[in-house]
Image (cartoon, rainbow, N blue to C red; front, side, top):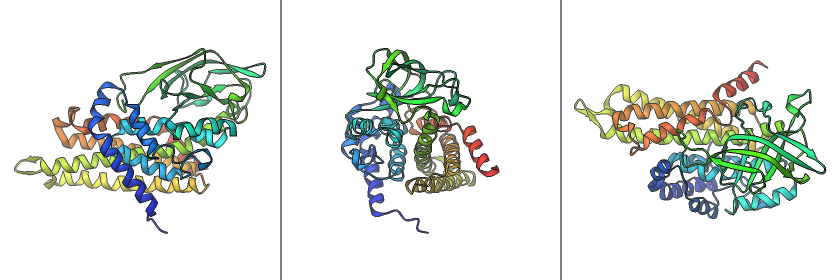
Length: 380
């Protein structure tokens, strides 16, 4: 068993770290306070090949794996989670398109995402349907050869920025199999009857756009359907088995940042006549953060590598997502605690990390959902 990264992978890490440190650091606080994002940073990341690395060369991508995408994600989040999310989430939905869409849909959407010409959003969550996605009530009803879409979505990443929206909608409400009632549709953002409103006041990752969407008699052509009718739930689960890996990498990146900020602070901060780093209580905190970070990284490395080998282990993915997210929240909490009163102000990076961390335990499967999945794989 060889745990060494290839030269190409090490080069990717180095390049991603250099880009993030050079482009994110000076503007992180600005974007956090304004809840905005400069799209020129996204375009620059696209030009350098950091966006959509998992997209096949057939559609303009680098043809690398989800593993390499995770490596980039970790480096971006280690510098600033808000900007890291804003830049790399611009392809959130490309995974599903590449897996299930028609060739025409793939050639229309994927090259534009890689080239920095378009952003995609994926609309799943509804006000009354969060973790229980099978209860999603937005409807797509057949209208001749096409469809008519009605309903609403909430907490949609890139909702006001996207050129395309992947929409999870109810197409067969009377089906006895609740996992065969929904389908995905690729909806142009400029469609008549589609309204997007930006949500503000988020706790963290404030640079990333989040919106609520309303669909009022949105007319779609027959070719808007992604894959087969009634397969939306299965497509969604396959999608999450890729995107949850991204969350793991985000969590490890944030944990790294919390650890780095903590080490810097405790070495320089003197209390009771000696640096905080000399106190055993502080050393225990640092040791636990470093150990848990390494464990979380090993979990997501294995899970991502298996996916790229065509072996999707949904139990391992859930385990990695839950553990890495929980660890990031704890690390951010400990980091702020070690900073004391200083950490309570947003001029200190650790305050943003503390706020950014919590979403990791919520989106793309809450920690409770992930534990249920893990238990199911163990108990059979």
